[in-house]
Image (cartoon, rainbow, N blue to C red; front, side):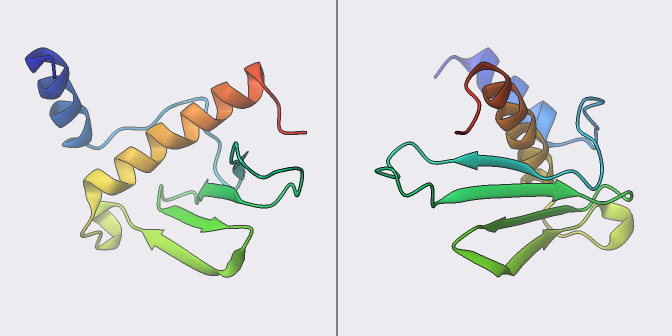
Length: 100
């Protein structure tokens, strides 16, 4: 792996940030590629106004995982940041190739 890329990943994951295009109380949903026409198997990410991340799938909608910000007692701040980046990736992929 490119050393600069790895350094940048660590730097980005290590500090709190927000992506302005990601809106609180909005679900970012992406259907996986191998659903064979079932339209099942989506990942869903959302954020609350405090910036806490919520992750679940349509296969287990009641099993919501929460990753808090530091102010909320978060212990997985890098994971929360990665989920924010993933939400942006979902948003961008949905613009290019909407779930059908």
